[in-house]
Length: 283
Image 1 (cartoon, rainbow, N blue to C red):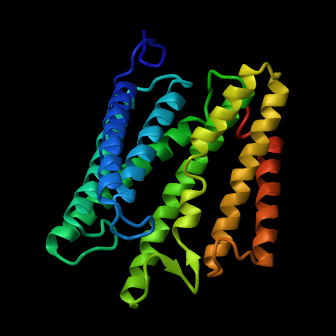
Image 2 (image 1 turned 180 degrees about the vertical axis):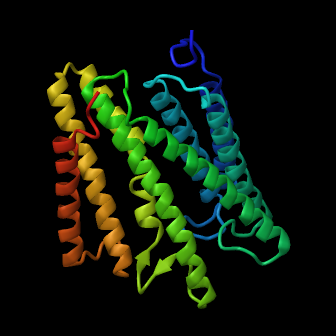
Image 3 (image 1 turned 60 degrees about the horizontal axis):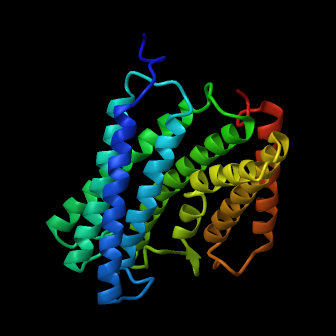
């Protein structure tokens, strides 16, 4: 048989599972340290960061492994998924290392070592983003799933990729803010730059979970598809709102009128694309 039709275990998926286990263990360890050492939630140096990165990255590995099983295998899967698994573990490991040293992991070039660690983090993030981009593209092909699950997988991967790309924008803008003597975490007067990055990140877990729960309660495919579309629209709307607020230099809970308009327009565009072109739900 050709690699495209081979069934059974996939080395790349196994690597993603191992990475998820390592990251989960790391999250439990750092959360225990955080419980003992304490620290503020929003501080630049806090055990909150490696703890959240560990758990967030672990579920991302599992979600990516799930999405991969919906499509036919490719010859390069083992290499790309193993690279993803190694990169994401190294990224979180470097973040944890900096926390253990008591220094920020991001926007920190105070010493040559700090600059080297930051370069390592950026490199691993680039690898992770490239693999997510590849999987998003491959998911546009044939998926062995019902319409609601196809929508959940494709929209989830697209939003995860969007989150990663926003992260690069945040990095570039943060460096500019830092060079100007301002906080790299804020845009304008009160824009929270992490806001639009974090909102779409976990759609890849939220959407499949919605589809699964609806199926468990016996909902028909059409109803499941409609509900997943509604949830996906909600994430798109929240992401558009977050981006608008940040670019306007407004806080999370200080809505501007234009943010409401952009939010509504984003939902309209998403639904037109999903229904007219069927780019998210076709076979």
